[in-house]
Length: 108
Image (cartoon, rainbow, N blue to C red; front, side):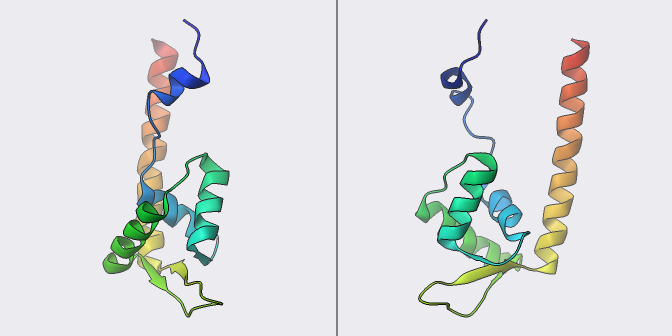
């Protein structure tokens, strides 16, 4: 069976907007459009504006990110210490899932 780019898209994107946003902000503060561009660059997922800002509101309410002062009509956000801890834990779990999955595929 040949795997094509189209057949891979049937799986959908393995992405959670919150995880992608936290990963983007881990490299420093960004405004919404910069996050959209960064996320698309590092994982190929394009977040729609509504999805992005809905997730930003939830992340801010949880204390995982914080809004900064407006910069030329753009509001940058940064990850908080709590957000960095949550991201680190989530990525560690994902790393274990990937490792296990790859090991199991190698033996099947």
